[in-house]
Amino acid sequence: MNELKKRFFWGNSTSSMQTEGAWDQGGKGKSVYDIRKATPEVSDWKDGIDEYHRYPEDFDLMQELGMNFYRFQISWSRVQPKGEGAFNEEGIQFYSDLIDALLERHITPMICLYHFDMPLELSEKYNGFLSRKVSDLFVKFGIEMVRRFGDRVKYWITFNEQNLYNQWGASTFAGNLHKKEGINEVYQIAHNVMMAHVQVANYIHEQTDCKIGGMLAYTEIYPATARPRDIQVAREIQEFSNNNLLDVFAEGHYSQAVLTHIKNFHIDAGFKPGDFEILSKCRSDYMCFSYYRSTVVNSEKIPENCSVDDYLKYGGEGNPYVEKTPNYGWEIDPLGFRDILNKIYHRYQIPIFPIENGIGVQESYYNEEIQDDYRIDYMRAHIQALKDAVEKDGVDVIGYLGWGLIDLPSSAGDMRKRYGVVYVNRTNHDLKDMKRVPKKSFYWLKAVIDSNGKNL
Image 1 (cartoon, rainbow, N blue to C red):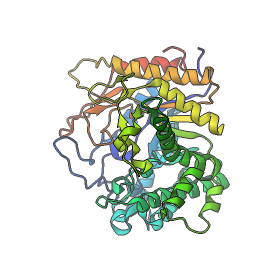
Image 2: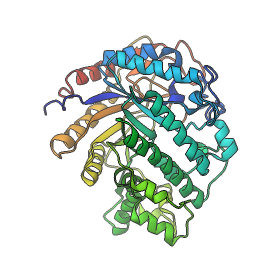
Image 3: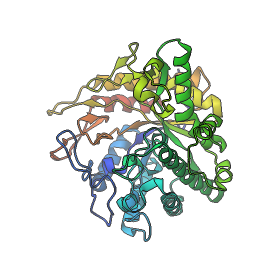
């Protein structure tokens, strides 16, 4: 296949709490992550990879790699320490300088406004996104960031992997570290988060020339067999976990199947008068998602009267027809990636932007280049699947962003699980010198980007 279209975005995605460190510097307030303690298996969140001090070095590596796009996150508690009230000008200046550093290197910035790191005070005072007040405070924060940076940053998303609020509900991610939510609260959190997204998106489209889209964590779900019940269960997961939010992002309404479920089971989802009118105005300039793996659902393992949100908890099982990642056993399924690109694009006819993809593997550095051929194989297969979706299926894809292409602690805080093409010399409990060391995959990916995807 020929190279991808001109101005295709090649880049990297990260979060603030997994990269920045400097948890108590520059006027930053505490987030829910800052109080988590290290365990024998994981690190704490205080240091990340010291991006707060080292971002020029990492941006130089990104420029050397040929990247022209970087999705990063603004830490809410760094720019507004309590999540409400006064903004922290020192924190805002940090991000302003970071944006300028990207633009100087001809790297287009994308801002993500939230990656699960609720300001601690909002969690403790209001119970996080279970409160509509926190949703409203997020809108004020988001609009202020657009006002501050929208002259230089034209690409935005609000919430990282927004459907995880539906699937997990747990305020570990939504705000509160302790409370176990019931079904009403899970739906209320999801709706409050969506109302926050929609109001920021509507502001961007009404008041600026910036672009915005919603983002999901997308796992391809296969039925375990040709049993009709397996197929039905897989379809229901798709509808509740993905289409319900995609319908709002693209068309301004929730899935009718989900609304019917809410009515039939007398769920209090926290809908307020006027909410649906606000939702109806929502549109997206692109549809974003993360993709790492596929999985299988077996309906015979699911108990009667089980919520759709728990189908995979009971019915999920491994796929014997695909390879698994070393160490962690995640399914490697590039065809699943291609299928998702097709499903979203042909349903909504909106450009698709996969903004997280990668393989996490345990690696060590001993003064020799890390020979991560497994990462090269993984990325080659997924980029080829993307190219097939473009050339053979007619999907409009505007870019491809890897996850954490400079090593960072995993979503669980585990530095052993590495996704990067650049090694960072630290462990869970020893920061060492945090030296950056390109792996074999760095030079492979550089050649891919130099050819705009032609040479894999």
